[in-house]
Length: 550
Ligand code: HAS
Image 1 (cartoon, rainbow, N blue to C red):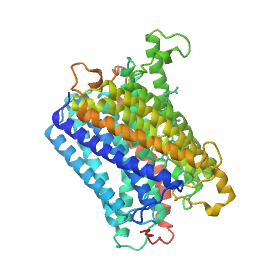
Image 2: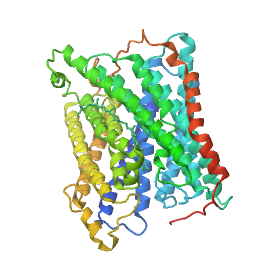
Image 3: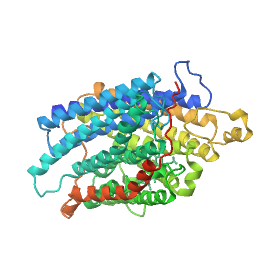
Image 4: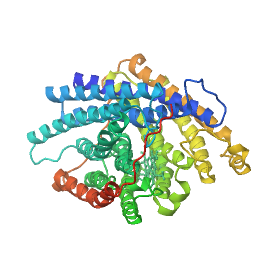
C-alpha cells in the first residue's frame, strides 16, 4: 500500500476529476438537444457557454486531474513513498491547479468566457479567465516537478539502474507536457492577458493560434500516454503475462516526445499566414507519430496472443477466446483500445493535406475527438477507476458494482457509436462545428443532411442521452467504490495495483538519457517552428480587436 499522504493526494485529484465529469457530461446532454433544436435555454444561459464548459471540464479538467491521481499513485507504488518535500510541493501544485480550475469554471458559468476550449482569438474572454488558465498550467507544472524530484531521488539512490517502466513513462509524459505548455504559456502571458485587460488594443491572431496548437496537439498525447501506460503495463498483468518488450515500450514513449510537438500546423492547414512548405513539413512529422502508435498496437496484439497461446489457444484467432472477458478491468480497456482503431484512422484522414480541406471545421472533427479522447482515453480512465479507487480507499469491487460497470461500459460504447457515427457522417455532408444549431432558412441541401440512417437528429440525441445515462452510472459506481463497497480482504484481486513485470535486462541504458532525447526534440521544434513563427511576428498583419459575445 502506498503512503497515506499520497493516497489522500491521489483521491483528491480523482474527486475533482469526477466532479468535473459530472458537470461536463450534463453540459453534453444539454448540447445534443440544443444542436437538434429541441431545447431552449433560459435567457441567462447560452449554447456557447454550455459548449465551453463541456469542452473545458471534460477534455481539460477531467483528464488532467485523473492523470495526476493515477501517476501519483503509480509513482509512489513503483519508486516508494514520497519524501516531505515531494509531498509538500505535490499538494501545493494540486491547490494551484484547483484554484485555476475553479476560477476558470466560474468565469465560464457566469458567461464571461464563452470562447470554447481552444479560446481562439479574436474571441475575447475576461482577463481573469486567462489568469486562471495560467494558474491551472502552473499548478500542473508544480505537481510534475515534484514527481520529477521523486524520480531523481530514486535515481541518485540507484545509480546506473534503469528506472521501473511506470516511472520512466511518467517522466516521458511530463517531458512532453512541460515542453508543449511553453507555447500556450507564452500566448497567455504575452498576448491574451495584456489584450484582455486592455493594456494593448489588438492581438496577432495567427500567432496566438500557432502558439496554441504548438501546445494543443501534444496535449492530446498528454491525455493518451497515461492511457498507454495502462495498455502497456496493466493489460499484460490482467491477461497473465509480461510486458512484450521493455525497450520497445520505452522507445515508443520517446518517439512521442520527439514527434508529437512539432506538428501543430496540421490543425491550421486551412489558415493563411503559414506557407505550404512549413505545413507540409509538419504534416510529414505528424505521420511519424503514427509509428509509436503502431508499435503500441503491435506490442498489445503480441501480449494478447502470447497469453492466449500460454493458455492453450490454437489457430490464428484462438487466443481471443482465452482473454479474461469476465474481468471488467480488462474488458473496459480492450473496448477502449478497439475504439482507437477507427479513431486513429480518422486522425490520419485529418492529417492528410487535401482531405483536411474537406473535413476541417465540420462535425467530422467532433466525431473524431469523441472516439479518441472521449473513448480510448476516457474509457481507459474508467477501466482504471474500477481498481484504482478500491486500491486507494481499501474497498473492493463487489458483484453488483461489477455488473453495473459492465452496463456502464456497454452503454458508453453504444452511445458513442451512435453519436460519433452521426457526427462523422454529418461532417462529411458539410455540417459545421463550433456553431449553434442553424437550419439555414430551411435550405433543401441542409435539410437533406438529416435524411440518413445515422445522420438524423434523433441519432445524435439518442446517442447523447445513452452517454449521459452511462456517465451517471459511472458516478454511482465511483461513489459505491468510494463509500459503499465492503473493505477489501487480503489478496483481493480488485484492490491491487496491477503492474506487469517488464524485463529490462536487455534494454539499452541510453534510452534513459533524457538530455539526448529532449535535445533532439528541441532541435526538431526549432526546425519546424523557428522560421514560420519569426514570419508571423515580423510580417504580422494589423492585429485584431477583441470580440466579446456577452
Ligand atoms: Fe486528432 C483534431 C490528427 C490522434 C484528439 N484530434 C483533433 C481534435 C482533438 C483530437 C481533440 O491532422 C480537435 C481539436 C480542435 O478542437 O480543433 N489525431 C490526428 C492524428 C492522430 C490523432 C494523425 N487525436 C488523436 C488522439 C486524440 C486526438 C489520440 C486524443 C486523445 N486530429 C488530427 C488532425 C486534427 C485533429 C489533423 C485537426 C482536424 C482539423 O482540421 O481541425 C494519430 O495519433 C492517430 C494514430 C492512431 C492510429 C491507431 C492505432 C491503433 C491502436 C489500437 C490498438 C488496438 C488494439 C485492440 C490492440 C494509427 C494503437 C485490438 C482490438 C480489436 C478489435 C482487434
